[in-house]
Length: 441
Image 1: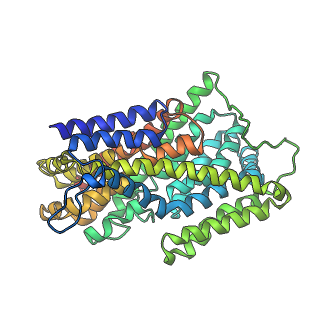
Image 2 (image 1 turned 120 degrees about the vertical axis):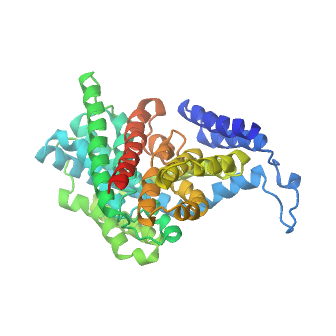
Image 3 (image 1 turned 60 degrees about the vertical axis):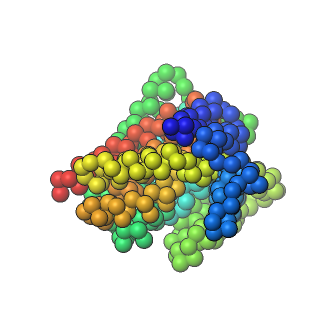
């Protein structure tokens, strides 16, 4: 019972501190400490008992830092290059050029749609959702400035285009769609017919949600608020041509697609190429590149450590006896195995604050159980993928914290409502739709 109180209380504390604006580097370990104390975990390595095999039992400090450091080691180069790429796109005038072209030729009403579409293309092209936020932010700022839209909706637009209808759809090269494959013997295109319907549903509903929220804010008198840190270009400033300006983004996607045999390191090559192209496009601004690179590097460190803090919490949470009890409970839910799998993955992704983390923890345990219960592997793959993208986007999620605070410089109070509507409510409804469609066909 105590471990249940600690697990739920630790998660609630983490969410509360995050929403209140307490630095996640403080909130993460404090909340994890609550979980560890109530789970009976020793706090430091010297206090951990020795197991029969001669290894030390898990402890709070080692477990938290193992999760923290593993994410840092895996993703730092990608965060660094992604942040620099976004800064150079803004400083070179490339982002402003594309934004001005879209709003002048198509009208300002397409600014929101263009932001979402840019994220969707990069995400479905395989660029990590974390990096997409960095890459498109500069463009989003210019689009929202040109259309005079409230910038507090930029995180919602970035998140909607990245972690909903593209991330978990059939054919997506994102890790959230690939993790189930070795456990279920499926491919990335598992249950593509239902996936296509659900993706269209999520894209339509999510856009209706966020566009109405933006429209209501504009009608209430809100507009774009300029910041000192923004790159600003006067209307008569000579900017790169739109075709040239979009080439760095196209270059990132193109290089990534042709180098996927390199695995995640293809992203390093792609982002490095994008930075080079952006520098070429903005060569006339080369005198500012040193400061631009420095801002990008600083932003990358802040962003990745924010995410690491949440990953560390998840590493401690999964050691709690309540965590395993929760997993056993959802597997015992009667009825369709697809419903049980959806609930299991949703709950674990919410507890760990990670779609990929939730899948990685849940699948080795639930896949054999539900396959033995008669679940179709193709259907199970799609349900697990879609369900993982719902409660993972609670306020403490690493991507959410990074995008709202580190990338966009907003607060949860101002920006999270739009993020929740598009990345929690919409995927949850998408999961329900998928379950209904699988039960019918």
